[in-house]
Length: 457
Image 1: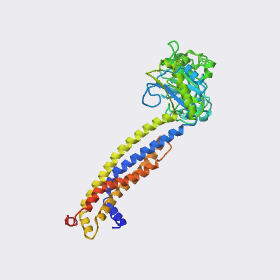
Image 2: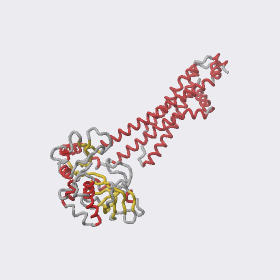
Image 3: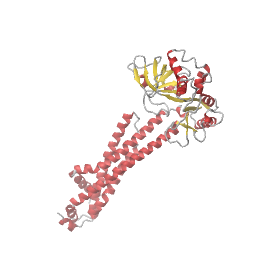
Image 4: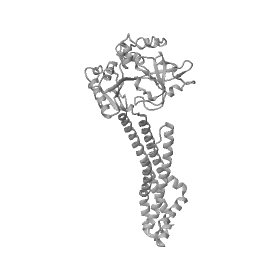
């Protein structure tokens, strides 16, 4: 039988049972659409995160102290062990460009003087170079020891009147204390600037660790004594000079607190950031190795907490992204597994419908054989029909998956990346499912005895 004739007869049979054919391919459509949608979202998320790692950020090494083999992302199981003296010593190492602490300060609300909005994400305390000058669309970096802040567009736009450089904000710290700050810069993005923050868009206020974290750390029990607490700093916020008198010029200059202020020198950080001299891998490795050697040596303040229980972990953005990629791969494999079950159900559906079709067309098969059709002709006819169902399911599933991936990427605000290899695989899987599901019914049809078929009612 001519292949085109087999195709025409198979298509006529499918069109004659449209609802049944549609329900038959539904399992394949859902399975392939799920795979393509989630793989597209995974590829888009990876591209978005990689795009956020600037060349300057690639030279940063992010560190924390946690129990060995602790699973999770950045800061999983982290303990506050690093002092400003540790950071000053690391910064003085030959292979290190800069070193500073990183911490979040939990807040309740933020006000521009006329309007107050809830903000629970808090302040992000770090060093001045945490925010690169090229990431600023307006203003400058904050200075250590000053009551200044850099905010992102989401934080600037959460009031009825946008906040601009030079405005003052009042932040209510968790616990009810209030602190003021002057906005000196606005970043170019509302996404996180490092793996410590994550990369989702949300309002963020960046402040120097000294004085903001130095004051809060003592109250939180991360260093210091009872006589030196965060309340005094909060009460002096209303006085422009009062908040800064406790910070010596030396502490402001070294970028990490200083020895001139008991509060700031006693603070301990959960996380640190060490900047290599360049993004070259050899420079990054040298900075990481020298920083690790010092922090684990008896000369560091952190060493008294390290040992069998805790160890220093220093990783780059690329390495931390690798952990994220492992999670994404695990999620993708999980979705592919679910889709495989759907495809199995779809293949069973095709096999079932083809068996029904063979039974319904038993008399037609007998007539075909009576007029000279060979077994291979009957086999080809029913195999063609099952392959058509598989291909239709694959095409519809691919289209639905591409649309789902597009809508998902737009909703999450990610750059759209289509994994084209999965589109090709989807078509191949559809054909394969059709062939495998149609083999037995087609073989059974080809083996039908023409005499018995003509007698079939």
